[in-house]
Length: 248
Ligand SMILES: Nc1ncnc2c1ncn2[C@@H]1O[C@H](COP(=O)(O)OP(=O)(O)OP(=O)(O)O)[C@@H](O)[C@H]1O
Image 1 (tube, rainbow, N blue to C red):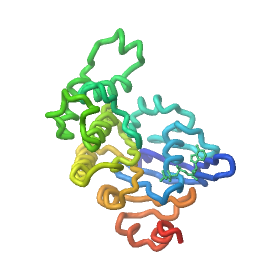
Image 2 (cartoon, rainbow, N blue to C red):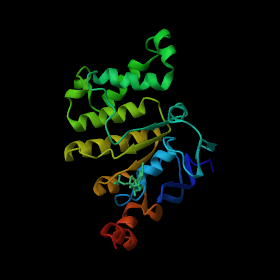
Image 3 (spheres, protein in one colour):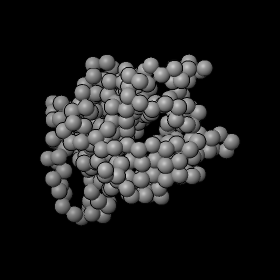
Image 4 (cartoon, rainbow, N blue to C red):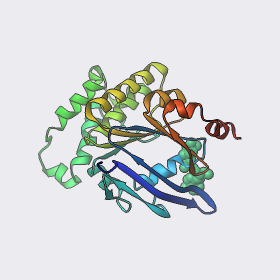
């Protein structure tokens, strides 16, 4: 069997006296859409930031397709084929949808120097156009991103994360603040992208309906450790999970 796309091994992270993540381990295999859920303060963001090289864990390792990336910076992880979105939108409001997405591709492809003096495009426009079409944003291609609805900006954000042609994408609360119609659209597009490209997704999300319908497997964190893991229907019926959410 091939190496997991993502292997998280015994990650620990404390802030002063607060043990935010207490020895978390899990694997994610190619093509999975893994949901990472848990009550507020359970350690999801801290774990995400440790995986993505934005926080140095106190202990543990992160492997991407068998390679130890524990000490790697976020920008280098991106070059290895790991994409991400942020809880806060990362679009530039005064740039068009197309330019935002091309810029995300440029960040993946090269340094500032090569972007200034290298070929201006390198196929990025075509790739960006394809993603714009995929997310059904063609009519907004030349619109300034700042004038889009919040949900539309979330779609642009997702397209930006996919510009690197990543094998693994981490989505940080993709459904936050998005209306129901746009949410259904976002979910359907992510599922289709996953089916067409085999891209692996890991998703932190508070919206239970979204997570239950999007994910193939769910891991539940509480107080910094994993309390349950399984298919959405198993998690929905798990009494330990229900108790954790009710504060039991
Ligand atoms: N930079 C920090 N300094 C101090 N404590 C922190 C820091 N970041 C997180 N914590 C604490 O670590 C614990 C886990 O927080 P974390 O944000 O990872 O949880 P979460 O599950 O993502 O929460 P939420 O769902 O509310 O975003 C919390 O007790 C939080 O207060």
